[in-house]
Length: 390
Ligand SMILES: Cc1cc2nc3c(=O)[nH]c(=O)nc-3n(C[C@H](O)[C@H](O)[C@H](O)COP(=O)(O)OP(=O)(O)OC[C@H]3O[C@@H](n4cnc5c(N)ncnc54)[C@H](O)[C@@H]3O)c2cc1C
Image 1 (cartoon, rainbow, N blue to C red):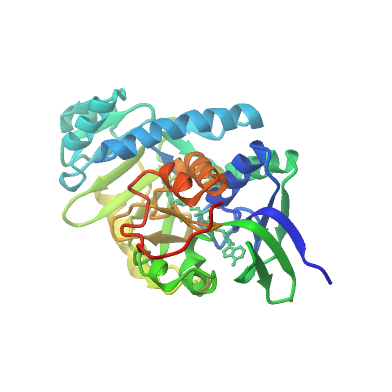
Image 2 (cartoon, rainbow, N blue to C red):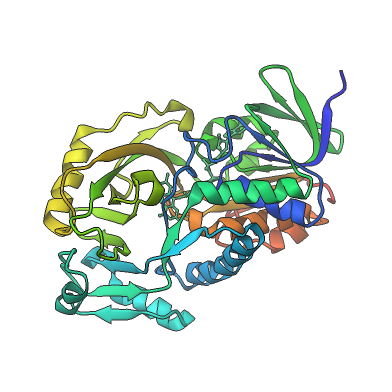
C-alpha cells in the first residue's frame, strides 16, 4: 500500500498546530494536520474558554511580540467572523510581580496603563485585597482557546488543509529528501517538511523524530506539570472582573473570568506552577491535589473578598515549562520544532503559527532560522550538522 503524501505535515492540533496550519494553508501550501485526539483536545493545553491575553511582561521583546500577535488575532477574528478575545483589562500586583518594572516596559512599548497605589486600586476594585502597588492595563482580555483552535482549523480546512483525528504519530523516519511519519496502526504519511507542535507530549516524542543527538542536546529541559484550576462564584455577578496575576513571597496566583467553562458565573483561580511534575502529558491522572485546593481556597479567602471561597468547579491541565519560560522554535533540516508552552503561550498563538509556518516553508534552514526571534532559537547549534538546502 503506498503511503499518503503531503508537502507539510503538522503534528498536533492545539493552539500552536492549528495556528501553523492556518498560516501554511493561507499561504497556499498543501498541509495535513495529524492529531492524536481531537483539536483542542481535553488532555492538551488548549481546551476550554479561558486564557489571559495581556501585554505585561518584564521583557520588552515579549511585550512587542504580544503587539504583533494582537494584529494576527484581529485578522483571525475578522476572517472567522468570531470574537475570540473578550476585553477585560488586567491587574498585576504583589512585590514578586514587580508592578513598577512591568509598567516601565508598557511605557517603553507604548501600551496604555496606570500604576496605582493600593488604596486607589481597592477603591476601583473592591473585590480584591491589594498588598502592593497595582498595575492596570485595559488592553488585556480573555482568550477563548478552544474556539480559537476551531476557528483556525476551520480556516485552514477552507483553504484545503486536511485534518486526521485519532492519528497518533509514533515516530518519524528520514526517507530520501523527506520524512515518513507513522502510527501504531501501521498507517504512514510522507511529508517533505514537518512541524512538531505536540505540547506536553514532546518530551516523550523527542527521541523519535529523526533529529540528531547534538541537536536534541540543545533542547532545554522540558518540565511537564499537571496543573489545577478552580472556579469560584462571584458575590456580585454584575461587578466587572479583570484578569489578574499576583505574586508575593508565599504564592504566585492568577485568575480570570472563567467564561463558558464556568457557566459565566465565576472567576477561574489557580496557583502558577503549583502542580506535580509528570514525565509527559500522557502520564496525567486528572486528580486534583486536595492540598492545592486548600491553598487556593485560603488564597481566595485572604485576597479575593469578591468571591465566595468555595469552588463550584475544578479541573486539571498540563503546562510544559522551559527553565527560562522562553518558547522553543527552531528548525533542523525539514523538521520545525515548536513548544510555545510554559503556561503563557496562548496569547502568542497566531504569531507562533506565523513564525513556525514561515520558518518551515523557507527555502533554506538558515533563511528559516533568520525569521525566528533569537529568544526562541536553541542556544548553540552544532557547527558540524548537515542540513539540506530546503
Ligand atoms: C490551565 C492553563 C492555563 C493557561 N493559561 C494561559 C494564559 O492565561 N495565557 C496564556 O497566554 N497562555 C496560557 N496557557 C498556555 C497555553 O494555553 C499553551 O501555551 C498552549 O495552549 C499550548 O498549545 P500547544 O498547541 O503547544 O499544546 P497543546 O494544546 O497541548 O496541543 C498539542 C496537541 O498535540 C497533540 N499531540 C501530541 N502528541 C501527538 C502525536 N504524537 N501525534 C498526534 N498528535 C499529538 C495533542 O493531542 C494536542 O492536541 C495556559 C495553559 C494551561 C494548561
